[in-house]
Length: 302
Image (cartoon, rainbow, N blue to C red):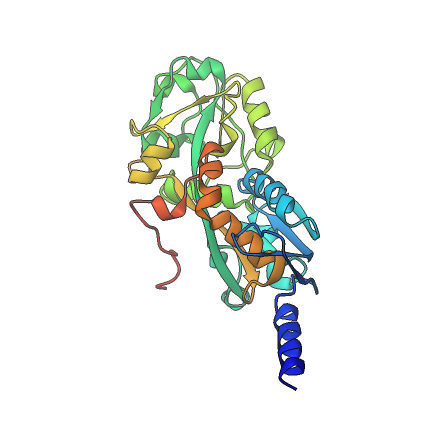
């Protein structure tokens, strides 16, 4: 009877490790989070385009140790990811902002926040502008993105019109930039050049004289044909973000409806691990545990 009870207990423990949609853990294989079991099952992710490069890289490395796990990944913007996570149509919703900044209080309460890293957003300009404009004050940047300032000569640049390359209002990157770069000012929208695809935005800024936009540092590691602009004399770098000198940063979140389990839990833990931290920094993201400053949910005390 003791042997039978032990066998039943072992089976129950294995079943409790099921992945997002009915997966199981198989013994004897190394897991991505340093354990002795690999996970299987399916998991779906959508949301933040700023987090997408890291999620894609982490997923490839996670799959190497968890070949039986099936994970689908899409971008679409933070607002989309959060809404889908709250609706239960995806297992993980990636977001550049806290959930209650995009969802109703009731929707946000259903989600569990997993802060996986920190990301900084940098203003970028076309090469012709970058030759003269190296830094902008917060007020100058605000005036540019609210369309109050319309010519680069007014901020020390060439005598040419400013072309805004903007993001949709559903964008978490836009919300973060608006909060910390523009002091909450309502950003103007240029519908003709609006996109939440950071790769497209980079290309658009590089190809239009007088253009300005903003992207995560992770999109600048391959030295694209655009120039970054300092804010109040502080360069957008990992080091300045860690110290808190550079102010335009926020947490990257992976939200789950209720507690994470199975493949979702294993993937999140892998991304948060020390093992993956070096890869994270190489891609232009900050390791959250190394930050010398912290940032609270702006709506938490309301």
